[in-house]
Length: 291
Image 1 (spheres, rainbow, N blue to C red):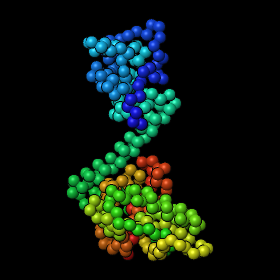
Image 2: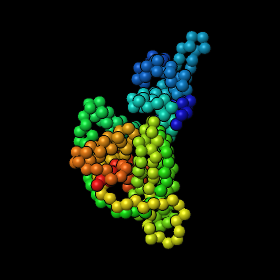
Image 3: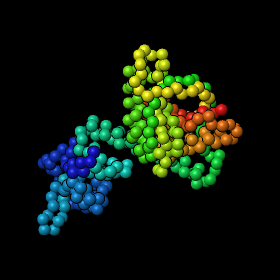
Image 4: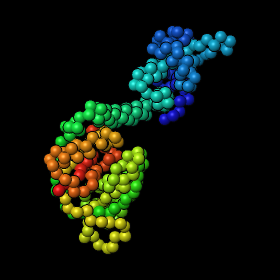
């Protein structure tokens, strides 16, 4: 959606030049379109909304009256803080496609705002220096997890590399599990060390499979021991870094407050299709085994 040069003239929202289609001065067109003369000149330079006539000597511009519909649409879309490239693509598209493009854009805005809201909450807690703040954000749960045979893949990754690696390794492991009869539980990601801009873990992706399946398993596996774990449940908007750190803080804070001990490294448990989920859908547990 980067074709800023798409010319909105006349576009699908107005018919082309016709008998009686008056020429308007830039001042008249500006008032009727609700676009300033400065904005009109910018959109002309971008190829988004070009005048019908430009006097070669004076540079005086005139627009067709039939361009007003497209110009008003541009003005309205810009009130959504929409980039010019996206505006150009939407306005130049036929009405059904334009509506779909607008929906795609706004879905992205809502996902970004939801993530930023969680990030702002995380930062307020950090800046307030409130050790109990993270714990108050989440409901703490406990559960017993049975022993599991898991396909395992481990790598040292920095935090900026983590999403791409998980996006590759988790589907790869799921496909391997399908060849062995399918997954028997949700995939989980274990952090055997700190993962941030300076520390690289390592990180382990674990995919539970049936230990009684037929035939040899030619992929790395290990047995994850049975344990009791404490966890908090996250919506998709809460999973991004660094706001997810508040969830880990809440789990660690509860363990400390209850005078319990960690019995293994912390982890994230993904129990649904993360990519298909919306920002308010529950997708992941941040968990830690306890004694």
